[in-house]
Image (cartoon, rainbow, N blue to C red):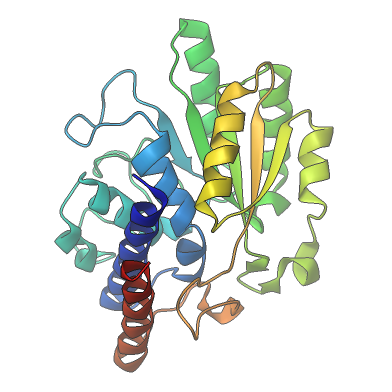
Amino acid sequence: MNKSELMKTANEIRKGIVTAVHSAKSGHPGGSLSAADIYTYLFFEEMNIDPKDPKKADRDRFVLSKGHTAPGYYSTLANRGFFPVEDLTTLRKVGSYLQGHPDMKHIPGVDMSSGSLGQGISAAVGMAISAKLSGEDYRVYTLLGDGEIQEGQVWEASMLAAHRKLDNLVVIVDNNNLQIDGAITDVNSPYPIDKKFEAFNFHVINIDGHDFDAIAAAFKEARETKGQPTAIIAKTVKGKDVSFMENQASWHGAAPNDEQYATAMADLEKVGEALCQK
């Protein structure tokens, strides 16, 4: 995909996020929207995956450590062809396989059930160690929230990742600066995030998490880094491209009503129209 196609795909993923959360009348749109560009690059460009064979042995693995942003994950998987986009409207409904948090037993493309914050990165480290022990060349990617890295388990896992020289592991931090109670700086500041990962002996890359050129360059650099894991700190906007959600902590875990849904979809339609004119 070229940059324009990636941007259009990310916009479709954002539409899916808003539609799913509106349909469920609950969920987490803010952090799903902020990570949409990262999701897009990972699943449409970076990772070795096959929607027709979700469990193929040599596939790259992805763990959504901030599991509450499942709407973003699901919309990405659906747009990538793992299951029908229409199923996004069943999010969180009784009988639906699309639960409020990722479920590896029932959702095609999900490699790890997650949701208890701080634990996903540990699972990702385990997967990366497994690949090294068995001599396999798949890579492991995990997406964390910047509020999530307030959890101590994140740093235990990071310590082990660096100790085992897991250059097949990429940790991405969605640094939108907001968590459920407000700005991360007000709740329990993890800054400077890059220096902390450097102290744990990670190769660290700081990027604009909405710039596909920067995203592509970061993942290329991560592939070329040997002997240590990589942490990509992606500066993002919570609620990206939905006017009334951007940079608002109140949209961490709230669903738009019908009027707000219409506004949100109109915002995303405008983004799509502007992309088509480029």
